[in-house]
Length: 391
Image (cartoon, rainbow, N blue to C red; front, side, top):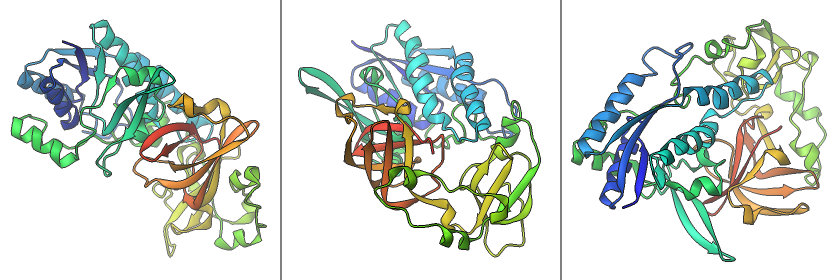
């Protein structure tokens, strides 16, 4: 009987994943991981570690499986939180959930599971894995979850073939209501429990307060750029990938000072909250941050042209192929479906590999392309690669 360690989080998805694996004849062990101790900046009641652990234990008892506990907080601090602070200090916006999966759930946690004699780890992610043979080699395909409202493949866009070989996703073929129904029929304590939100394992946070543990607050100007500014910009040749992917740059004289902020590194492209500038016909949104001069540039209205771009750039050393056999040689391009954030509908795009770097150009302009975030690309419903957005 093959042994599987399930990451029991105290939520309904991992609970049902454990049940389904047991039904399939695996020897199942439930393991709860603690990854964060500090509550600085965490909104009260939104980091319920003790509750999560208690629910995970109740599920293990109900399913009659062993329950283990592992503290990975030191690895999480070094590999995820320190990375977050570093990225924000550079004016980039990281995605801690993607990092958490690559570095913690499918690395440090996997290592702890293998020490227990497990052949696989399993999670409650809404995605699927398929095994295929190509040129006498075994390859693993990461497919989108069947439930389009819950597909979580994007969060796993940095996994590699070795990690996928050791991973099971038992609920990827189900829709969320089906998962809750199974849990209710089993009488699992997690059946009606709300899904967790916020930063992976930290919870919902007041981000500026959280970041002020390492990054100092510093007053600066908020400058509004009018829509008319963009009429002065010459049209860019669509074949000029470098110019097409370059973000707009601004100076104070391009707009008007409309307020003050407490640190440009606390803001991200597309952000609306926290600007505290009133008296406008429509809400203001962040369109750029100048970290060096501590300036936040904003535009009025969610359709402001400064929020939209058609192309993005990625350094070669920050591009990752889940399917290395599909990696493009330089000088080639391929049609893909892509997204730049979780739950964004897949967009038609072209991935270009030039002599030095990668460019992703979209058929229609995208809102809020943000440095530090991950772009992920698919062929049909298979996630084949991803990269950190450089600019």
